[in-house]
Length: 270
Image 1 (cartoon, rainbow, N blue to C red):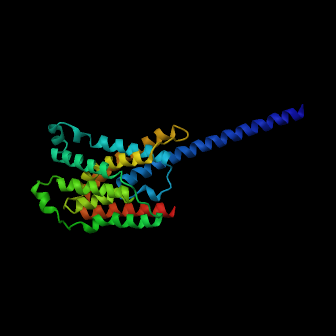
Image 2: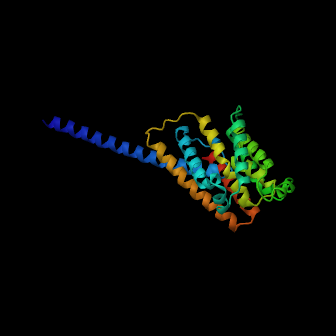
């Protein structure tokens, strides 16, 4: 009888231990999902790339999807009727720009992707992240932009579409490539940020399709990662636009690039 009670006590102890381990695993998954959403939002908005981070593709896909929906929601007025677009600060020229740049990104973004070492990609990414601030003030396309009365031109759409495609194919930072293309047209920081993010959904669509199917385990990690990425992306976009109003354009682009450099260093060192 005593032995029977001892065995029962041992079984209960193992059950409690397993429950504790299960709870710990769930908490760890919860934290990882939240951090993946946060990190993905930073990568999408700043000049950085997910290739230098050891991220689970099963969580990266819903994180990309969360950022995609957040950007579409933020710029939803771009697809509204012209009076509403004008009221919200958009124009038909911006819609034409977004359509052309998106089309180019989708067409060219599915070409064969070139691979490289983690350190080499980080070095190339850091250089690209800093280039917009360095190149700001050199405006070879400014004359053409003035012809279109400060609105994004077809040349801007082509250059940004190609820049995003190159970012996909060579694993370079999307934010840095598109910001560089727009800086060469002489836009200020606010317009660079706006026109860059307006076409970022095309980049995300290509990355999601390239990643393929995802099967997060447990399944609730997917929606949690999506939600985390959505809210962080939306909040950061709002903060970045506020920051463009407070900082001089070159200063903002320098800050923008430095954040990208920090993200690359984190990916390589951690």
